[in-house]
Structure formats: structure tokens, C-alpha cells
Length: 114
Length: 113
Image (cartoon, rainbow over all chains, first blue to last red; front, side, top):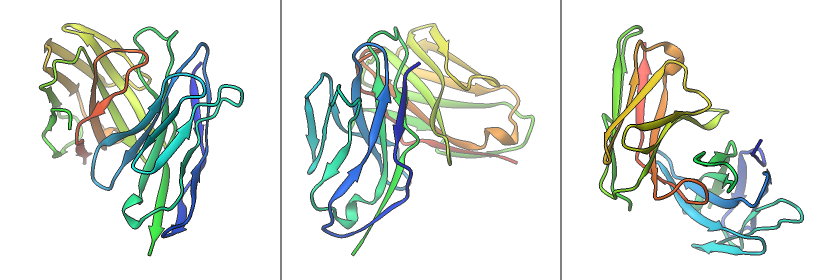
């Protein structure tokens, strides 16, 4: 079946540090890949997405590249801010899965300290 | 922000009582979903709908039922609440099924005592 594995947290970084959150997936066919962010007390928000191999999604300084050869979609940011503290979820939806919705990783909590 | 509201936002109820959570959208999206979020489990799909009166089960559907009589409303019912159903419940919508991103509501925190 389809699945997403993302690195365990929590991740604690100092402000302006480089961020990488690893995400790998298993899917038949060609999935679309997503990163969602959840700020404290809120619902999930779409951060970025990529729909085919070698696509790069980007938003708010975050980037992730769809790597079919390594089945990965790692999230990166060059310089994190305290306001980036949140839980980040990697997710996929697979084109061969009919109506089935997103499959999520378990989330990675990021804390950025000043 | 996508027009999704959930009600109530917080609820405390007793074991054995029925509970209904409501999700309302103003986007006219075809697909609607109910998830629960628990520490260590991420988000898990309970039920989803791909049209009015068309619903299907997710991975954790036991003890839950849903109904969708109008495009804009998707109801989640706990027939007889148990303490294991204490959780945060999120509704989501999307224009399509596979390949489409979802937009999430603000969540309902349910406590079953």
C-alpha cells in the first residue's frame, strides 16, 4: 500500500539555522506529494506541493523536490525563524488509488529558539 | 483561506452519549473528509465523502458514522462515545480525489469523560 515515512522529531534549531526534514514514500504509480504545516491550536495548512518527478515546490522560503529515483520529498529552508515553529506533515495522494485521500506521515515537530 | 467551519469547536461529553460534529463548507467542493489527530499517530482518516449521499470508510471508522445530505455539510456521529474517542477532529475538503490537495478546518477538540 501507499505510505509516508518522515523523520522523528522533535527538531530544535537556533534561529537562522538550516532546516531539513526528511520524507520518503512508498506508492504504486505516480503520486502527488505535499507538505502541510500545523501551527499550535490550528488546522493543517498546505505549505507546498509537487505533482511530478523533478518538480520543486516552494513557499515562504521552504522548498522540496520530488525525487522519483530516491522516492523522497525532503523539506528544506535555508534560514529558519522562530515563527516557523510548528508541526510539519509530509503527505501523498496516489493516482491509482481511486477516491482515496491523502496518506500522511506522522509529523515532525520543529522548535526554533531565538 | 478556504471556507470551512467546524462546530462545535470544543465539547466535553460523557461515555455512552451520542455526539455529532458538523463540518460546513462554502467552496462547493465535491470531496469532504473527517480525520482524527492523536499524539504519536498523526492524522488518521475516519470517513470521507465523494458526493452527496456518497461516503466511504477510512482506516479508523469503527464507532463512527457520517452523513452528507447537502454538498456543503458533512456530519460525523459518534453513536455512543467512548474515552478512546477523545481526540481532535479535523474536517477537510478538496475539489477532486486523487492528486488534489486538501484544505482543513480549524478542528474540534472532543473530550469523553
